[in-house]
Length: 258
Image 1: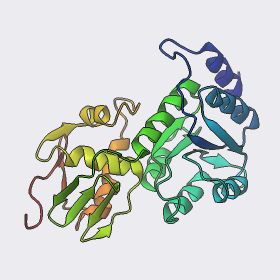
Image 2: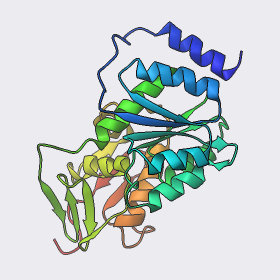
Image 3: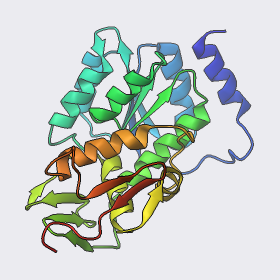
Image 4: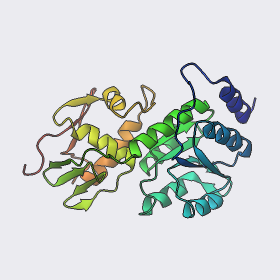
């Protein structure tokens, strides 16, 4: 059975707890994958759950569509006929207009290093092939929830030279904006809202609004590494986000001169 056949079978099966389609009419997705049969079936599945879905079968076509109508999230295959999805990820994270675009990477390679590299250069999440459409749906919804602007809190968290602006959804060090993806910002907020408290990886995953990561998924560690690279003065000797060996992470209560 091909990957596309597996996917359509799972889509038809639905599943317990799937329920009626959830209204997401304002969300526009771009799915870039060269398996046209797969994109057609997955696109139909997501449209059935209220999404507006555009598809592209190459990096070139995807770039054109990204320069056109704005999208709310991107689902990007790692291997494409005219290049590597990692190349486009780098471009997006270097583009001020698209830097915060929620990005979920698909990969059939199955190598952990491919996933780690994708997360390190700016992907918010990854999903290995073959996948169940309802898991893709859940992950995309989680990305969109985290990317939604906070309409209630305008609170500014200050830790010495580091500021975390919940209203603007950005962190600033010495007044300069830190280059973080939406998922990395949310992860930083989870830690910063419990300063001095050690949080396990499971507690962090729970706080990230149901982000469906496997129990032994190391993507949190990769994102923490990326956060440290932009908020720490010395990543080899962090003073803000500390590792508690065998337990998890803690955001330092006292930093710099505070």
